[in-house]
Amino acid sequence: MRCICAVGFLTGYLCACFNEIIAGYTGMSGAKFFVVSNFHPGTWSNLYKFYGSQHQLPASQFPLFAKFADHRASVLFAGKHGTMASLVILAAGMASRYGSMKQTEGFGPSGETLLEYSIYDAIQAGFGQVVFIIQRQHEDAFRSMFEPKLRGRINVAYAFQDKDAYMNGYTWPAERVKPWGTAHAVLCSQPVVREPFAVINADDFYGRDAFVRAATFLRDVCSPQRMALIGYELARTLSAHGSVSRGVCDVDEQGRLSGITERTKVYRHEAEIVYEDDTGIHPLGDKRVSMNFWCMHPAVYPVFEKEFHRFLSQNHLNPKSEFFIPIVADAMIKCGAAVFEVLPSSADWFGVTYREDAGHVRQSIANLIAKGEYPASLWT
Image (cartoon, rainbow, N blue to C red; front, side):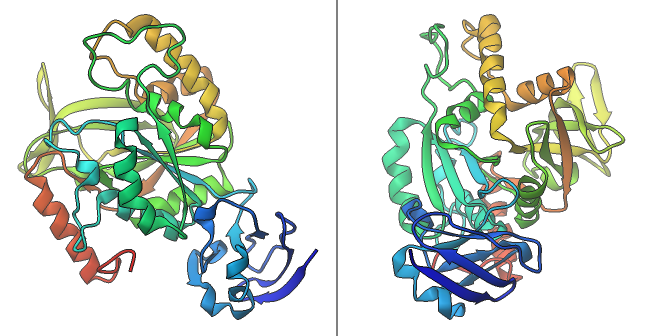
């Protein structure tokens, strides 16, 4: 067995042996590092994650490690769970309102998609795997678009939201077109996720702050009884081109989620934000809203499956019914199985609710690049 001793740039020292995960030593930051070999090919690169300080530095800055890059050794932060978190991306839905598969539309100056900015932020925050939840017919398109860019930067996996997955004997309604919904999509990621994970939409821009907060929570806090939701300021999530639907968070005194109230037709009216319903126009005030950015423990999967079967027992013949993530979270909160902390983010969210939003998204990204928050080209 071959051993190496090296002085870490930020952490004192690390002793490790090649072949398997051998050892990890705690450095000055309190972060634990491991040398890993025979891991998934997507993780091997000259990029070593010194996670305790939220930095990523190329292996060339660590001469004692760089020489072993060809041996497929990576230094990975593992956190209390002994592994890095996964980012699960919900990309199986059809972009009916926008009129195209916006998951694969470029918005950056080099044609980057919104997914790519999310993945870039996730890599910077220390996530170790990205999982695309897609429909099988889109697999080749996703592989050809993302794998050449992500190879050597982060592990990539795929999960398929098949229409009959986990249906437990129920039949797919002949007139149904859309998949079963976001919670069903998460359930379909079960075969490839074994670690704490975050869930995001494919077609939203969430901002660096949100990924850092999620990574920190998943690393240090997440457990089967303690999960989280990133809460955005409502004012930072509106469209200038029409009303939006938002899940308004009900938060208790401890900063925990007690429920999500879906509000449709939310928009800015003069100096305030309002929503409309059958009874009229109502002010919303300064609220935190869910943009479907969740932090979860893999122990949640059996609950998703149980709640999906409950959902099907009541809705399987309804071609428009959808099984959403808040349904599962609400069930867990009400029975006391888990709490969901609302992690406040200061980031600006933006996405393409209407076709006219595309110009705003491109300009917003250009502004962030001008401020130095992103390179002009993410992957070169």
